[in-house]
Amino acid sequence: MTSAPPPPLPYVEMDGHPATEDDLRVPALFGFGHFTALQVRDRRVRGLGLHLERLEGANRELFRLPLDGGRVRELIRGALDRAGMRDASVRVHGFLPPGESRTRVMVTVREPASMAPGGRSLMSVPYARAVPHIKRPGEFGQTYYGMLAARAGFDEALLTAPGGVVTEGAITNIGFWDGSSVVWPDAPALIGITMALLERGLAAAGEPSVRRAVTLDGLGAYRGAFLCNSQGIAPVRRIDAVEFAGGDAAASEDMEGMEGMEGMEGMEGMEEMQGVMGRLEAAYGSAPAELL
Image: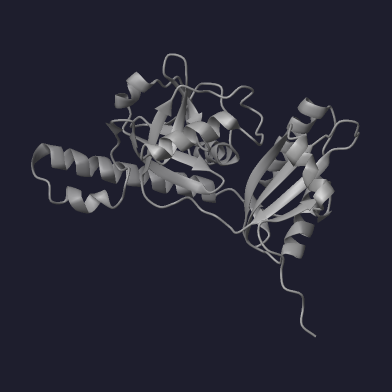
């Protein structure tokens, strides 16, 4: 007897069962809610406890209702089982349609994903999210400016507040390297799970990161930059017209052919940022992958 083939991806469940047409009316018509996005590898998740805390905190703030972490884990495990997946990209959404008294939990399962290799280019945009500490679906501004950045040939939009204050990437956190420590923008932004794990890992390794105001006109003071989210960590090659050393490992081959002080400084900057990226990966990798 052959087993049934797995369902097509993306696979969607609502409250522990395959989503029906009525279930899908919830996000379609009552999209006010929150979510978290996580990468599952062999049924394990780095920062799982932080994801559950994010869901619980947002649910209480938006709906004044608890969202039990044990229930969430059970729903994720069930969705992965029925999707036939051990490695996956998973999102967990919380909704409260009008007239209901219990949070509806939607779990989506897709193929696993990782950050694209190579340096990233960012276009600064005059937009900062309202209530940024809550991760929520249907963020028009981020999507709109991300679209404009892509049309202009950039990989992502960099969100900025009035005065050119850097806040976060459209779908990432951004960090900078000043030559001695990792600097996170001291501005309203979502503290991503990967960012939180990096802060912990760097501190444990004796290299604590710092928060500092970062502005577009001050980017030249930094020796490098990077992005991070649930899909991983990547160096930043440029923001607008500001280039960063070490933003693309492939560029090291080009540097070898340069002569004089400029080439030497370029190679030193490349090697420095490669070392920083290695320490970031080690800090992230030090976080345990928790079993669902």
